[in-house]
Image (cartoon, rainbow, N blue to C red; front, top):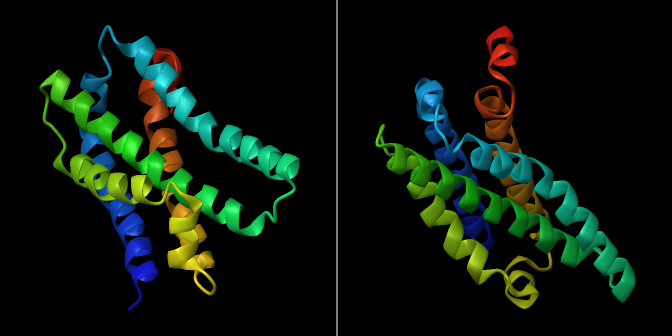
Length: 172
């Protein structure tokens, strides 16, 4: 088993652990989101839902302006996007549950503690290319796409508690 496979498995594992945190969060989400902080929570979640699209557009624009071969930097961008989204949502869930004193979420903390060092270490493109080139770039992309999909699915599941008005949430 190569190091690239282990790193990718770390992202996959942190995504799965974050999904477990979401299933626990869904059981008391109604109480959790009945707070005075709801507008700021709503803005955070809306930003997280739009972030992948904005980041990919900016990344493609930078690649186009610098006339770079897009395959390797784009794979790097997707990998980091997945890792950072897992980190931010895991940290958000952990802090939100801890502040509300309902029941803090150890799976969210575990997901954050796994994804954060990977995201920080792979910020330089050279570190990513050193580990994932030449044959395992697809594995890094798959891990990043998985991370983004897990976070988007969690946000989509929680949207009825936060993003919609109470009457709209009841109809779902």
